[in-house]
Image (cartoon, rainbow, N blue to C red; front, side, top):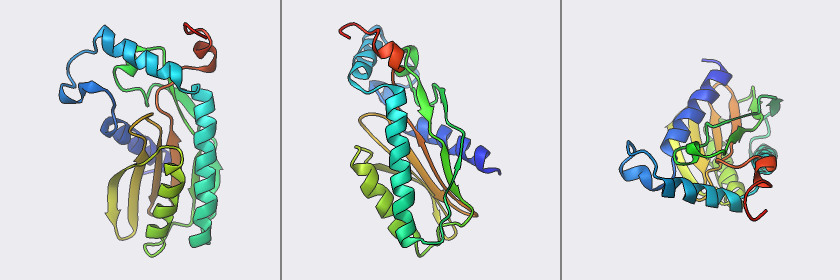
Length: 188
């Protein structure tokens, strides 16, 4: 499985697992106009998707830099694959004009060793927590293979950190208005 395919699978699964809203108890119920209006009101209080992506990319770089202090063999490289879509927009956000963005991916051909993993994960959690990204979903935690998603229960942003044959750091914003759309909203 290529890194790109793996990243896509991780992001899709993480998005499904971290969906927001009051539809959790009845996910097949279509969102009401009230649900959609509530999602729109929340997005009006958040930064634009572009600003959020920049902030998330900065967090990833901080994690990568700090991880090298405990895993000095890491050789982070940027894969320019940032993009915009609705992957981070679960319903009722999906029914709004909101979009989400993936950050560029940071990869290291040198994996994080099992002995380094706990310290790298703690560094990532500490840095992410400063931005409200406090929840942890462990996808895989076996010798030689670790894969987690750190996510915010409040604003939908998430960071994926994993290692197997290589190490990976990626980000996905929660659903946001584009800068241009944010300024068109009532009250702006």
